[in-house]
Amino acid sequence: MSVSDLVRKFKRAATDPEAPPVVKKSFDWEPEKAMPAPRSSSSKAAEPAPAAPKPAAGPWPQERPASEPSSVIGTGIPADVSDFAVVYKGAAVKPPAHGYGVDRIADMLAHGSLAGLDKGVKASAVLAALDAAGVSIEDVIHDGVLRYKALVAFEAAKELELQQVRPRNERRVEELKAKVAAFEKEKQAEIDALNREAAAAVSTLTRLQTRQRAEEERFHRTVSLFVEPLPGRVIPMGSRPADAPPAPAPTPASPTPAAEAKSELKLVAPAAPAPAAEAKPAENTPAAPPTSEPGKDEAKS
Amino acid sequence: MSRIADLVQRGVRVTVANQAKGEPAEIPADFFEGHEPRPSARFDSPAEIADFAAVYEEAEIPAPFNGYGVDRMAEILESKRLAALPREVRVAAVMASLEAAGVSLPQVVRDAVVRERALGAFVAAKEREVAAIKQRIETRVATIRREMEAFVGEQNAEIEGLTKGGNSAGSAFAQLQLRKRQEQERLHQVLSHFVADPANPVPVGG
Image (cartoon, rainbow over all chains, first blue to last red; front, side, top):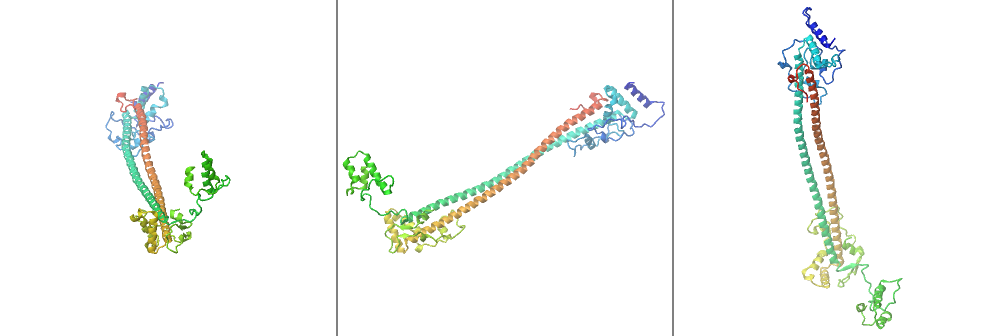
């Protein structure tokens, strides 16, 4: 037996004129135990159990003002909401009272018994089931439309939020940057003033030290006209080198300062090819000629 | 060591011949000791003081005997009348004025020593003041820099948070758009079983 036959049987059973009038019960298309596991992203969880079927409403779309999605969708619901059921609930989208909403129909279409069948066959089967349950397909379509509208509204609300958040954040960032720049400017000015203060103090000290040296120099210049340090600078009074008897040639081992001075004179003189008569008195004559003077000796050498 | 202190550290010998009678030819080093300026950690006189006289006064340097100290002697030597004359003449003139004032040469030299010490103490005090100022400023600058670092860090953290928040909001919205298209597609698919495509109230997702 094909599915079409099955559907026809269902329809006949549901509309048999000879059958005694019975109150329509909700059609248990998919008993709980036979139903597949509910989809995580659907709003099926929010749907109540199928209730008594409602007479079919007028053709879709009909005005159903009570079922319009809320205009404040998205308020308080994050954009990354895990389940759109929350969005539908927030938009006050309720499944039809008979329980046959778009989610339930989706589950019916995906049921294993209809797997692999043609799309039209599946639709016919579902329509037959709905018919049997006294449910109008318009109700299902209306439920789908409401959910779609709720989704669109939610997306629009989130887009609006984003559009508001971005400039607000950018304004705040600019404010913070300006605040940082002003703070840095103020503090840098304080640092600059402190550095100027330090530089001025150092400069003043340098000028003072210069003036101190000048004052000390002035004191020294004045006092040194009248006094001199005791040791070192006191030149011992002695005979002038020209008056002293000629000293013997100094030995390199023990030169004395005075001998060094004289040896310089004597060592330089023989370097030039001077006459022997002139060189001999300088070295060997004990008494220098009375007219000879150190300056002149130097000039000769 | 300063110049006068250097000069007198081992005593001095008077190099002028025309001293008053009874004046010593040599002045020992200990003659200049024991005349330290007032021990003071600080001077009220400012570093840029125009005249050091105030410094000497603050250091409680005694006034030179009969007003004849090293300053007066320097003034005489630098006077226009003597400036052009030979050294010996200037020295003789000063010695004559010293004798007339009843002031001895050692007293004048000691006056120079004491003033130089006072000036040295003053400059040392000012050096300490400047060092303290520099230290205070360095500390303050370091504090300011720390304040700046903390403030800027705090503000930058907020800026970063805002930027990150904006980015994550954009990312979350992009994810929402994707998921919304999928859901829309699902609704469209379900309804497409019953409504032909042009009349399907839920358009194709995407």
